[in-house]
Amino acid sequence: MSAYVITIATLIAIYAIVACGLNIIVGYAGQISLGHAAFFGIGAYTAALFATKTGLSFWYALPCVLIISGLVGLLLGLPSLRVRHDFLAITTIGINFIVEAIFLYIPFFGGALGIGGIPRVTLFGLTLKGIGFFWLCTGFLVLSLAVCWWFTRCWAGMACFALREEEEAAAGLGISPVRFKLLAFVTGTAMAGLGGALYAHYMRFISATDFSFPVSISLLSMVVVGGMGTLWGPVLGALILSALPELFRPLVDYRILFTTTLLLLMIRFQPGGLLGETGFLRSRIAAWSRGGRR
Amino acid sequence: MSEGLLKLEGLSKHFGGLKAVDGVNLQVRRGEILGLLGPNGAGKTVCFNLISGVYPPTAGQVRLSGRRIDGFAPHRIAHMGVGRTFQIVKPFAALTVLENVLAACGIRRYRSLIRIWSPWRSKIDREMAMAVLGRVGLADLAHRKAGLLPLGNLRRLEIARALVVGHKLLLLDESFSGLRHEEIQRLEAVIRRIREDGITVLLIEHNMRVAMGLSDRVAVLDHGRKIAEGTPESVQNNDEVIEAYLGRKGRGHAA
Image (cartoon, rainbow over all chains, first blue to last red; front, top):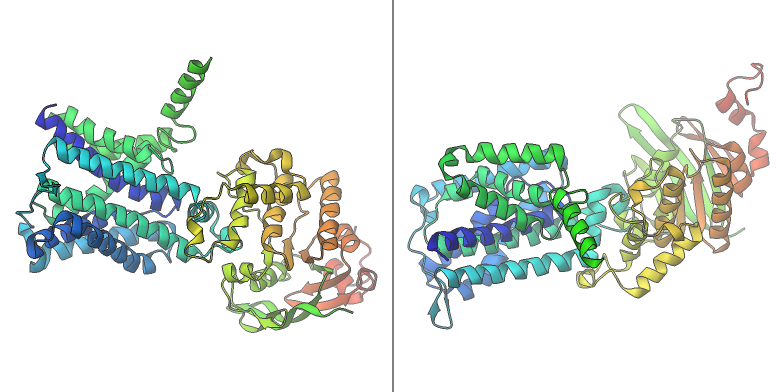
């Protein structure tokens, strides 16, 4: 595999992890978030600061990164999740802009210069680069998918589904809306933090614009295109939305136009996503597997 | 006469200048079916929302088995054994009928930070949910998507969910409205059986024949105030009730 393909594949795996986290919040718990890139950034900046200022290795810093991303998620989720629907959308957009501004204007976070010189990840004395780091990201993606899979099968997930469908009825069944929305939010933001840490160690230089609002939009597009609330949807979405712009490289300036057009088309023609309930791909896969069995 | 399970004392809810519920005193006895009647806008559903914790009252108290529960959040009141249905049905549309009831079965885990991580596809819960679906007559639709069910089945699904939660008290908000004659009869039988299981039922009903036939006692609200309480027969002949429903005397009989 060429280095170019490996780079794209690694980024797809990282975005897929972050999108999986967003899927827990949006797809499973039904809480719109348009500021997920902020938590992706918080993970990346935390990992970068640990690596450059304390010299702590990736592996020791990782639990701290997850905890800090989750805690910030808890702190910001607590007031945000008390509002619903469009108000929540606006609040989360606000979070994104505030977090980006903090990275940009506070010298501790490197200001406009960002943070550079982040070391590569080593594993058993081996420095991971290229294909090695790709496998590391794939491993973490598998782990994230396992968490998502478990989430849909445990009572916490059931509570979130109920809240997503009918909040008032769910509360009438003993489900605390605040508690379970926060649980989904914290799990999702911690996953974004994991993606962020991998991103920081892969790019080895990060700046505030890597985590700006358009990134949140493209993360949400990944979830919507693939299929909100499905297990593989975010992975498929990350694949499509990261690979297509590469295939049409000359059109790179129109990336946001492309993403938003795709998002609108999906909402109009495939609201459940490609792998969703009435999704195009899902019905194809179902037909194919039925044919195979015959 | 058995002791009161639910007690409303001077319960009031004002929305700005509108006194939706105004100083209502009411006692629901253990094991009875109490019908809450009244014309549209009398404050019946607001009363339910006060009992189930959707709103805190402006004044007054709600007591369940002697304990004050007014101002508690809805999920806390559910944990105390109060189940409710909604006038406008609120099914979890994307889930199956069985999963809708399973979501209610989770009430034994939702308060623990550890047990919420255990899987919900366990045999015990499944059997419990199926048994409840059997009680309301929905067992053969268990794997259908709830969003695809007609209204009559959705009302029974809501009762099934409420039954899992409400081992003490069941609040049924117009569970009969919009149903066909046969569906009404089947649902009446379901509710009678629920009472036989020792669950107290407080129901809001518009259909007079159903309410009078099913309730042990009825209370009538009008403009947020309780205007009558007693056996169905005594209330039926109460002048104030007749006036609230039909207008002043001398205008002839409406249906």
